[in-house]
Image (cartoon, rainbow over all chains, first blue to last red; front, side, top):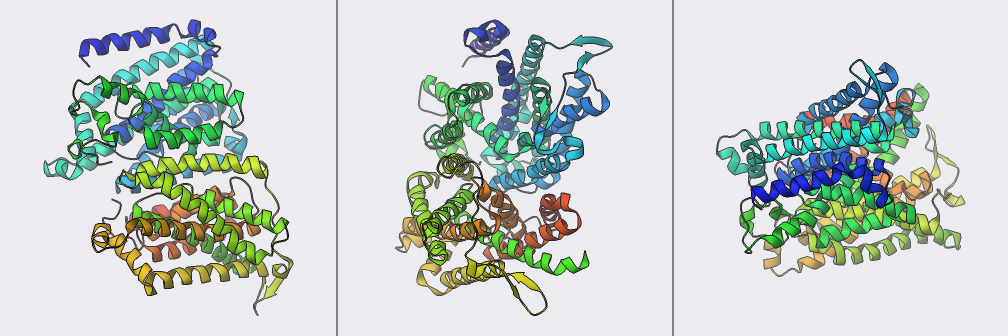
Length: 337
Length: 290
């Protein structure tokens, strides 16, 4: 994909989303659902950075997501934080979670990293679940939407919430793209392909993974804080490893290792969740089947498959970071996941 | 509180035996094929519900304890041959994701068949009541549980160390290609190994159903402690799973006694401490699974 086309495509998508409040009623969707898509896409991107690019099975990002949500909720409930303050506190809560878990997670790679992410993430789930006096326990906590802050008393409407989500999504997307195209991001991809070689080149891979982990947890925290303020609610299942699994599924579904894949995955997951769960109570079976089908037959995801089909030859070019998820990819692609 | 320490310690041992046997099944499957079986809890729940339905139809509990896990094994083999096998050549995280999907499906299916709420599944009367162990009274069923689980673990150990098949299994864990080159059908090994894990899970599922009750999510509730058990014991080590299970069980029962609110978190704290001191886990080998 040429830079020109990419810019054109990106602008088109963002313009399309800018008309979201007018388009969504035509599709019988609530605006808040589309806001949810944008918010969840940020969380999916946080998984993408770790799993799609760095090759670390990030099955614990719901912990940072939930910390963001609770960070925002608690600051509003107990300290009467304004919207912007709550957002910042929630994001920092996600970062803090990453800082706490990093020393443990950094020690392992591969599937061991995944198991540790799941297990340590559950700690936060049980804290939220058990610390009923403060967090409301299993019932979660209601968060009345605060006003904007900055000395004003602007109440955030559903539309304003949507554009806040869109603006933050665009900012995160640009930052994400910049990161994965930077030398730092290239190093992350190299770590996925062959960490030992990166070490031989004299780079401290632990340090790179540490930074990637912090970026990822901050993004997840931001997403969680936005989500909590969007649905005016924080609940323990946001922190549960099932939620992490949904993020990973969305990432694979959209296209791991692609910049826009996270949004595609989030669109399908959030809107599918909304539509199918109102039609049938068996949504969970569909979701499970989606997991199975995606892993077995569609590991490149939607965007990954489209991009692969558009390539002129069967060769795997350097910028095809999604190729690692192709079952038939040659060894040279370096699938050190 | 002091007089409760003895019984709580015993309860911790019972819990630990559960965690150990679930963790053993997980480890067996993980060591040979690198598959993280997130659906392990679903197989437990399946066996539990099957046993419940059998006992309702007047099948003796003892038979249900054997037959239900065997049916779960049949389901397990079908799943392994059709869905898990294609993933052996791929990165382990795919099998994690796939089996996670399976567990979601299973949970909903259990809800459809046996209802969304828990069902009471009480052990047979012969195992009800309490037995005196000289110094203290213990519920008979829990003693029975420990006995069965210990026998199952011993049988597994004997199978792995004393039979030709067990020998091949252990050899395959070390070097699958070599054992295949020497003329062993590794696909059979994979299937049998998976079944072994599921069978252990099935027994644990039936017994856990009798002790903790049955609900669509009850197996998954035991899955996370089992993962922690594997991590504490060390990935790659079966012996570690047993020790880890007992440690986690006792940690949970003791914190339940002294700080009830921290009962779930305690095992994660234990895990964190173990990992700080020994990143590979207590009996894990360096280099296995990263």
